[in-house]
Amino acid sequence: MVMRSIACVLSVLVLAACQTVVPLTATPSFTTSPALLSRNPADIAVLPVEDGTQAGDARLLLEYMRQSLEHHLPERRYSPIASRVVDAKLKDLRPERGETTLTPVFLKRVAGRATEDALLAVRVGRWDESRLMSEKRVEFEFQATLVGNDGEVFWSGSLVGNVKSGGLSAAPRDRTMMTQSCADLAIAELLNHLALRHP
Image (cartoon, rainbow, N blue to C red):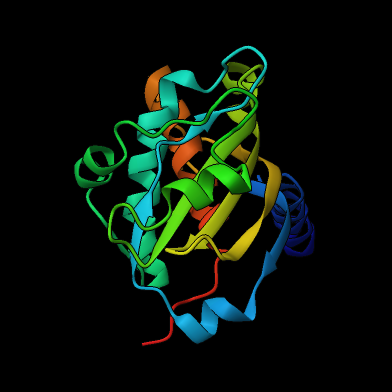
């Protein structure tokens, strides 16, 4: 009887382990230049996040994503410049026709304007909330580039994946908070692929 009870408990534990939710899966594709380590930038200007989705799927989250980038950069030992300062310095500089915030000529044009050591640009290529209410998950794609104040590319690439709202914890009940949770976790994962700044 005792053995049967133990076997029953073990079966339940195995079943629970098989059903463990993976909070985030992602495929990174980034290139880091040796210049990032040699120049060791500290002060980072974060550009407004760009919505590159076909239907503007990320438009309501762009400012939140930018704030999330500024929040997580210190975890990689970088210091974000206040967005109001960056915006004031770049208020008349926008991508021209055919350009995005990741276009090299645009980045070269704006680099150094906010007296930063480096400039971070992020573009959302995909933000799919079709599984949000049923599975608490969002599928995403980010492209990112970090350039020096002279336009030299330090780090660039993309991150494609899906994320569960709340991570390992329960998802928030409010839809807006659910999407913000997904955005914050995805942004944190994006920056995890940026090399730590050495002291």
